[in-house]
Length: 252
Image 1 (cartoon, helix red, strand yellow):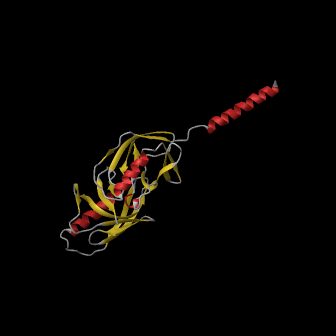
Image 2 (tube, one colour):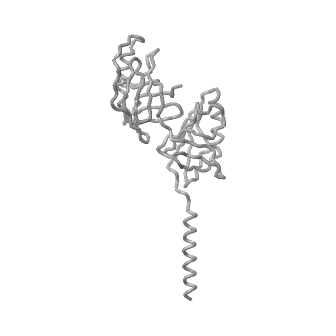
Image 3 (tube, helix red, strand yellow):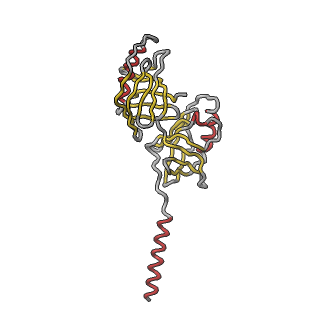
């Protein structure tokens, strides 16, 4: 009788261990991170127009190489189901943008699971094969300002002028404000960005007309940055309240 009790106890422990092994994998934390493609598209030059992805409130959005896209998604453990319908803008693009977009959406149609490891997101098919690989998007690099907050609204640049922003490793900020070079520091978090200690050289420029007033307005707006969003090669700096501080395109 004692042997029977011990045997039943052992079988219970084994069964319990097996149940733990068969538990579903925890759901990856997709939301709150801007992702940019790091691999999976076999199109020459895809890096120039790398698609982006952001998961929030049951919606997957981003830029797919040419157009902006949006579709629904549900996540159950690692099982990821994307919506049958994808809403897209209708811009016409040449290659590699158009070819990348076609390949990207073909891969999305096969997605069945998502997994995060080593700071990267992998989208997998139904047989656990990797289709697309993403890394966390970052503002590090050099950007050209296309518009920024001036007074009560966002305005484009004075014709013939150029403003740049470089976010470098180690939190160093630099660039050209249109006439003078400037520098400062920045702190980067998960979707947050603060800019401090901005100072500039003291040259005076007369051409193009209005460049000095524009420069002063830009340098005053820059420290108001509290957050950022990244979609493809476009970066947007935002205040804490969500007002646009500046819009920027990747340089080069």
